[in-house]
Image (cartoon, rainbow, N blue to C red; front, side, top):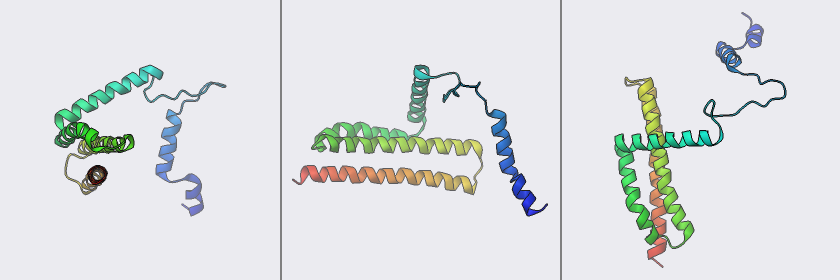
Length: 160
């Protein structure tokens, strides 16, 4: 097959992706906008309610099964009341709380990535190990940020 013919036909993966997209693409009737919904059949308040229940389920699962989430949540429970004594102003308090929430958010994402990797590839695999290591590095940098924010707030509070 000539290079020119291959370019006009496209890569097999591109052809497959185009074919799948065309099969699943719904064409709205003329003059109608295509509905945008993350949950098919749900929109507005129903979508928000379903998302809230998904969040509650994720919180329950994470807090009942994951040691790192339990530890970081326990630290946050102690740190939130402590933040009222450390923060000198509203924005410092917001930074302290936001740093804690960021760690929890990244830890939940890390846990989700680990669960997905274990589901896709239960056996040990180099690519899965690297993926998990990268997600873990994200948690590490969030923890470093917490340390920086809380140290700066404590220094500002107690040295002046």
